[in-house]
Length: 172
Image (cartoon, rainbow, N blue to C red; front, side, top):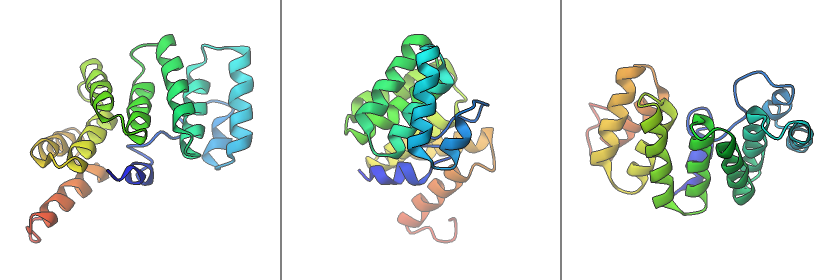
């Protein structure tokens, strides 16, 4: 499995600095990892239940390939809020990075039970299935994503790549 691919597709598939406002997010978005980690850690010392800081710190660890540390942070976030979509998706990606594929599937399925239209979970599940050779599962997932968001780049690229792999150059 090419785990690096997950981290190249930062917007939809890999943990990145959460989109909501938090004083530490600008540091993470600017790839100032050490400063962002200190900022998030300081925020968590003041409020251990700060999900934005917890998920942000997990994303910083993920960007530095510290997958076990990132996974631990996402699991702590899930203790605060068991149905946190960011933490569930992040946890799944870290499980994949640690080659714990079965656990990643279960985690993504849980995210989809909570929110069946969770584009990030659908995209991650499609990519995992494609990378695992289960294109018969990946293709319908990408099509479902396009029903929700016809402009989803990951789904368009995924279906295009699948068609090209099958030799359907005209349909790609």
